[in-house]
Image 1: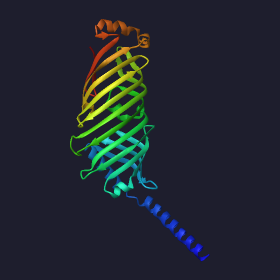
Image 2 (image 1 turned 90 degrees about the vertical axis):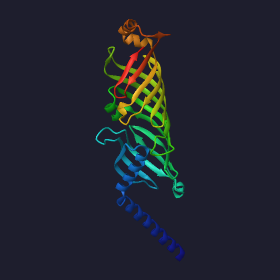
Image 3 (image 1 turned 180 degrees about the horizontal axis):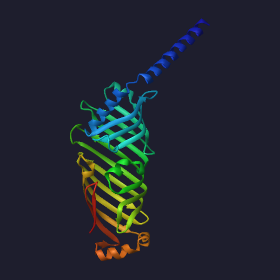
Image 4 (image 1 turned 180 degrees about the vertical axis):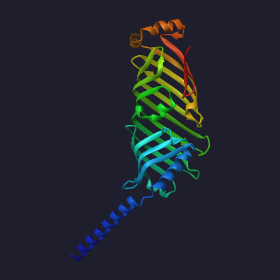
Length: 295
């Protein structure tokens, strides 16, 4: 009986210590120091990035919860390159003990879901990451609206893999497989009297080469137009000034000519190159001011 009473006391003490620890953890959590640590880690990926969060707190059993986290490209007064409503970061404890930083990510952003892993390894804190996201609502992505004059809406899903063999140099490389569904391209000003173009789906493969150039391969399917595109984007510090070197084909469908009967005669008058119903085009200029031309 005495032994049972003693065990109950120890259980009570243990629960009390755990409760006090949890309360202290929440009220004395060094949110500012953690935010600075995360900001420094993100800057290792790109020195131009700036990280801010509305709130950072502990997440039981082990980890962090970030509320309204944002990553800016140089200027926090502009639109965020990426923002998340909530993000949970869970460390791999055993790897931390061995001096390797490895984390699982899980959260919500742009009314969709995001999850993945992030690793920092080696003395130079080399970076490797794998991120998957689903059903991002592009209409919520303010960065696109601020940087590009045309508006692209729809739901974006995909996977991104990134690694940097030498942090602080131009050695970063990565790949992305992206899928846009229920998309629509809304022109800032009508093009050939067309104000918008429905895009049923776009599949895009992109490869980042040494942080300098993105190689692109894309396939478009829509009720009005099918098409394909290949080429590259030469990146600049100001992403809106990144140079475009793209080419591809467009294949208008019967629905397109039905909705825009004047276009068929206009294309004939322009004497553009056509083969098996496909028109050839190039896109040059910059991301902020692209120049589209039919060949």
